[in-house]
Amino acid sequence: MKQVTTVEELRQLVGGARRTGQSVALVPTMGYLHAGHCTLMQQAKNENAFVVASIFVNPLQFGAGEDFAVYPRDLERDAAAAAASGVDVLFTPTVEEMYPQGYENMKTLVTVSGVSEGLCGASRPGHFQGVATVVSKLFHLVQPDRAYFGQKDAQQVAVIRQMVRDLNWPVEIIAVPIVREADGLALSSRNVYLSQEERTAALVLSRALQKAKTVLQAGERRGAVVEAAAKEELAQEALAAVEYVKLVDAATMQPVSELQGPAVLALAVRIGKTRLIDNLLWEEC
Ligand code: AMP
Image (cartoon, helix red, strand yellow):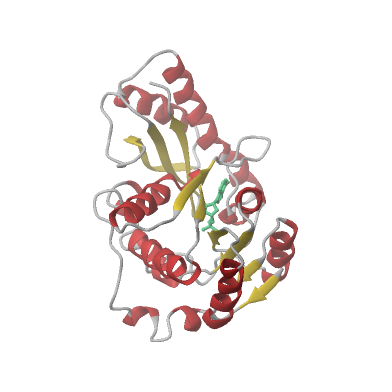
């Protein structure tokens, strides 16, 4: 595996792979890699000859007062995990390399309306604009045949898919199922913020999704009833402050009152100071 920090080196390495006819995959991450990230990288390697992974804590997608400055970082450990997962090139740019004029001075920003407005978009204004902009830059730099994202961030997947469709990008977006701890907690770099007591409390997210799944499996199709099942479970946990519980269309992220096509039950919950998201993808109708 080669680790590079500049756009120039990245372009040269990817150009070399492409000239020899290799298919190219991209796995964008913010680092502090866990088994969820590694699954994305491994799947990318299984399906493509040449895998580029990026580690970049993107200031443009963090709001004021969010955790940009304290976001966990461990590049040495990440490089070992990426190499072991089959990554060919690990791109770890500085903020200055990605935004030479300063991210605050970016004049070209990618806005994906509609799909990015509810759920996390409502509580984190500018977040998906920051995501869509940095992913656009990475797509231009790498020009991947396929790009891998986690279903853990279901709204992010929907935003990127919409952007790729709207802009005729020749890249296939692959969504990888959520990787969980044995006890159900969805893996997240932010789980390190949780105290032991909070870590136990955080299990309420996956329990709430399980409750909703049982209701769906019993044939319930009304969005409000499915949401109520999850809310009821979340209400049992004193440390949990619910931000949203919403059944939405999997592609548009618009609320679903009566289930008809693929849908996502999406949760955002604060456990202490830590904001966690999780979701259930429901494709049977
Ligand atoms: P992040 O570093 O948090 O930006 O995540 C990088 C990529 O890994 C995103 O596409 C995430 O959706 C994905 N990811 C994060 N956690 C998980 C998980 N538990 N299971 C599957 N994919 C994940």
